[in-house]
Image 1 (cartoon, rainbow, N blue to C red):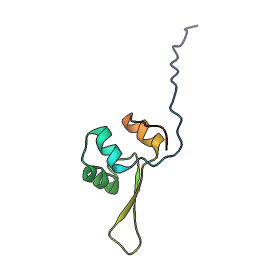
Image 2 (cartoon, rainbow, N blue to C red; image 1 turned 180 degrees about the horizontal axis):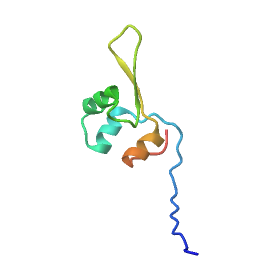
Image 3 (cartoon, one colour; image 1 turned 30 degrees about the vertical axis):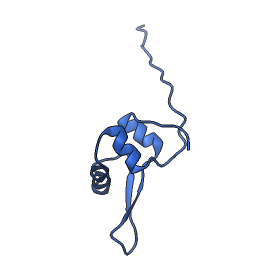
Amino acid sequence: MKEENRVFIETPAFTGRNVPIMELSKAIGKDAQFIRIGLQKGILTFGYALKKDNSSEFNYYCPDKKVWEETGYFKGGI
């Protein structure tokens, strides 16, 4: 019987923290507006853009786990 190779990694301690757009911008080297539009259009999938009722403004939620899974960026704390 062939022995399988297994890889174990230790994942960060995710809290569901909303990673701010400006923090993401610095971490991945993209303009904040690029990230906002990407989230609005569903092109970037590490977060959500929700349009406010009766407004042209959006709220953004980028959970730390989803950001880490798709970009490799993680900052613990707050």
